[in-house]
Image (cartoon, rainbow, N blue to C red; front, side, top):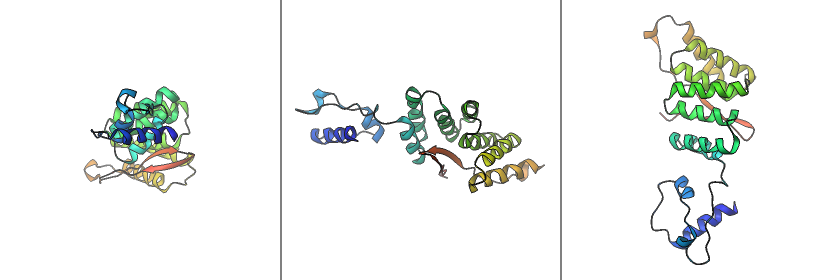
Amino acid sequence: MRLIAAFFLSLWITGCASTPSSPIEAMKNSAGPDQLGPGARAVDVPDAVDGLIVGHRLMAAGEFDLALREYHRAVAKHGPNVDVLSAIGSANLRLGRLQQAEQDLTRALEQDGSFVPAHNNLGAALAEQGKWGEAQLHFRNAFIFDQGRSPEIRENLRLAIEMTEKTRYDDLEEHHLLLMRRGTGRFLLLSAPL
């Protein structure tokens, strides 16, 4: 927290003439000591801020490209663990990179086969590709491992069951699947902007 406060204080002292395009760019473009003025020192903020946390916040804000970049940065700190791979897969899914999302989420499940957000999001990726049978399997796994607590997972499973029972593709109705991420010991839902 002190590092972030020192960073913003140093920007305020110099009267920063150019405004960065985003808060992430502001942190990454921290000025050198010769640009800050007398008595100020540069602070390396990006190492102090966890890319996974920043990525989750960017996903919630709808900034999927920036979130993906932060998730890739988190790999350097955390390694390719289930949380990071699931987050990368979710960002790729939001960017419409369905096959890449499927690969990332499958890799996450290879590490932890009971990780609820990865099952749910893999189900969403498969459903978006029209693979409703496989999607139903992953929604069912998410429902089981979540112990039926999430109404969103229940709805995704209901929709997948309904879609696998349909025999005519021209009767398909519009659907909105809900993605999940894990943060601070509980499951949080990300709503999709329409």
